[in-house]
Image (tube, rainbow, N blue to C red):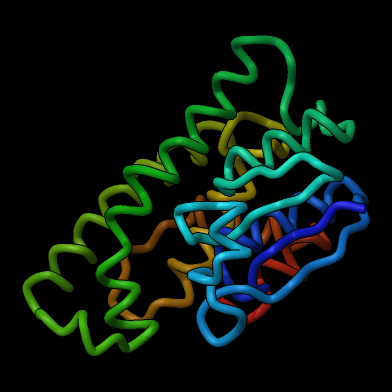
Length: 207
């Protein structure tokens, strides 16, 4: 059986948990990360030298990096409806997954740590303001995309890209600061909430 290593509150672990829910894929999970077993443990480092969650063990196959993991699971376990084989359709999904992992993630990192996590290492007011502004900018790009599709980020059907993007949208709404009105994103947030996997691992009170 698939084994997932990582605490369930981690946004990157939740990508994997949500994907498993979409695929009806059984798994076991071990708590690793802050507050649980330390990822500096040599047993964990032997699986992922980056000391980051999640890691999966699928039989004798070990894999890390959350977006890579969910791509693998979709490919291995019948998720072609979420991650199509046709190159252009797949590239559109990959585009938005990579955008979430790079541009969007970088924008919200400081603001989220300061305003949601109350990190004592993220107290610089100018950095908070700059992060909030950058975050709003990239959410504006997502707003335009969702207004165009009227549905999901890669097109008119739910895809693997909606898992990382949807979790970031949840984090946007959970972080307390003055936000612009983004009606297409608000509708998307509600649209995702009909999916059990999102209710369990995304819109579940955890940012």
